[in-house]
Image 1: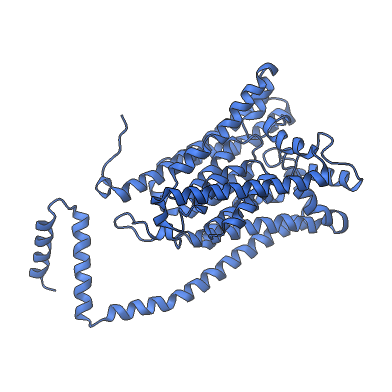
Image 2 (image 1 turned 30 degrees about the horizontal axis):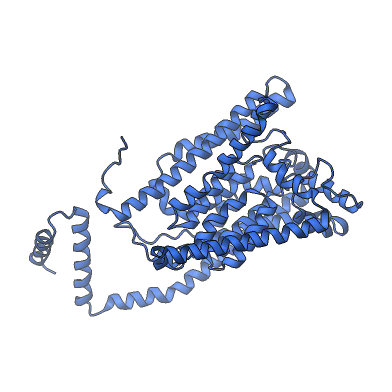
Length: 486
């Protein structure tokens, strides 16, 4: 193609759309050059396209091999530490209040198993507050097999969480709800490598420490991520059943029912259904009814096995926050200081704060229920009554699935520093308060406030990045402008 032809193409493009930006003119020029090259070479680009399509299975095979290596390495690392350093783990990790809470403590699980083995209901006292599902799961390893077998359950659950996260990342860009959306001009299809997603979760120090501490929150993570995986796999019945299981393991995954109902209504798999409110409402209501039925069935089964006391020892315990053992949450210090006359009012305020974001976030991101689920996981991580570092590890593991938002995030440095300060100062202030006696509870709670503020900042930044990207897609002319809110 000659220089005269190029000049003519640019002149014609300018005449047709005088308001087009320089970037759009450049894109049109590149397309013209590509068509000219295809004409001059007699179809060689088609041969290149066919060769690239033939290499796609090889790329998938290599990606699968990398994923298996990452999972195997994560499994081996955890097994080696638990097998060869059990005393270190039990002394320095399992007893950490940042990793184990009254609702996730392995020590309390063992006590509950001892009581059940003696024919005493674990829920009659005030010690055991975990789901009966865990009693059923650990009954055989606890009674008949060596301790390393119960450790294998924690390791396997953690590895399965990483596998589910990798599969969610692989499925995201292939969903009809995502494939039908336009991209930001100049942007290619984003697809974070599943092996990278698994690696970022498995080798996160918070994830590793949570697994080594034998915190039972890893089983709640497995149920939660399974809900998201089967939700994006267009298997709503299985996703709803697992949501009921996750709610019995830890009350707060119930917030995922709202985005799950949107998935069941076709927001991800039937893009044309977004304009049909009747079909969306029917699918959502059906999913909610199925969730209620599954939850009730599991509840009545546990009532038959363990009596009605289990409900007050698990769900009511979580809602009332009766055990004020220090943790990395907001509840314990506030309710130590509050007068009993005002306790119920502020309990309702704190719990409603954690749950009040469910409907607004789900509806605002109704075009992408998966992203709404990620946001709700982050909200629960910061505002639940008995949080731990393991809650943050799951939220951080979900963020890489949306790698296209990285360039839109403006407060990454601030949120990272807040989280690092909170994570680093909490053990130091705990040591000064409990072991040295030279500090007090205010020190540890101050580190907790910094930690929670870091999570809130990260949540705000992530949500703002998604909204800004949607604005760039719907209104490309605003890409070079700064949005100012007066």
